[in-house]
Amino acid sequence: MNDWPDGWSDDRGNNNAAGYGRGSGGAQPEGARVMRHVQRPAAPPRGAVPPQSRGYDEGYDQQGYDSGYNTGHVYGGPGGPGGSSGGPPYGQQPYGGRSAPNWRRRLKVGSLTLVVVLLAVSIGTYFWADSKLKREVDLSKVIERPGEGEGTNYLIVGSDSREGMSAEEKKKLHTGSADGKRTDSMMILHEGSNGPTMISLPRDSDVEIPSFKGSQSGKLFPAEGRRVKLNSAYAEDGPELLVRTVEHNTGLRIDHYVEIGFAGFANIVDAIGGVEIDIPKSFKDKKSGADFQAGKQTLNGEQSLAFVRTRYAFAGSDLDRTKNQQKFLAALASQTATPGTILNPFKLYPTMGAGLDTLIVDKDMSLWSLGKMFFAMKGVTGGDGKSMNMPISGSRNGNLVWDKAKVKQLVQQLKNDEKVTVTSDR
Image (cartoon, rainbow, N blue to C red; front, side, top):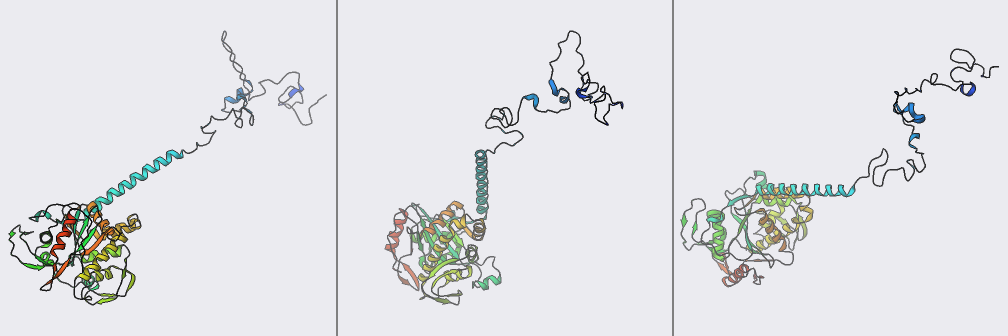
């Protein structure tokens, strides 16, 4: 009797139990002859130690297949990936995954990279700015100089130089078209341990032209006792004679010289977006182009230049103009030397570019010294500083005569870097 289901037969078409797939129906178990996927291992040589049986997975290992059963792992159990004893050691990456990022190391690398970048930018900015300074004034040509004192003294000069200005710019800024250049403003800025002091030197000051060495010819010119307006010294032989004249008439040594022209001044103001200033009284001046109402207002470059140059709107004296110049320069420095400008490259670089391109300084001036000067200007209005005119005692032939006693006391206090107690009545 055939126990196979209908339609089932062996590989020879016979419905018997001797062929493939008979299972437990035959008297003999199925052999490897029929199970083609299982290969019987070759008999070992005589006397050889037979290999240990590899069990059920023997045939699959040759195909690179690993069922996992030969490891003894049971998924979800203690020995499998889900168990506590079968997983990777603490801190190592899991099976097939990525290791957790080392944030402490990344933070260190990122911080170091940031420091290197900032250092490179700072060094690059320093050399870029330093290369823009026009070191054209040679103070070694100044003869018979006073002795050095404490602190640092800067002679800051605003000239009416129109160098590089187009006809349109001259018209817009009301500068005129005069050849050469003259001093429109002169100030001594003392930077020391007792706060900065800014002293305006009216250009109409009555001074003596001393003996001097020609800045170009090197020729010695003896003193002739000539008394002139202070700005005549600059017109006669430039910055070196101006420094020589200031030192001779004050007894104070000038350590550094800084000069800026009309265009540079206006460009700096525009680069920082204008300067806010409080004008106590309205005034007009056709020559400078000034037309201001009283009150707080923000001046652009053109308006700022008109503000500091205005002279004829006042009582004919240069002293009112010098007070406006001091006030404006202190406001300019205060609003420029801020984190909003220094840390903002979109403001810092245009401001430095506009100013440094037109600055003329002495040969020994460093960018560091220039920065100290700028922050000293800011400190004039910071509470510790002082601004004043050179003490005046009267006039001679329309020129302002300095008060000799007060000037002597003032210079002595500056030389000793003492707090300035001298006052100016005008």
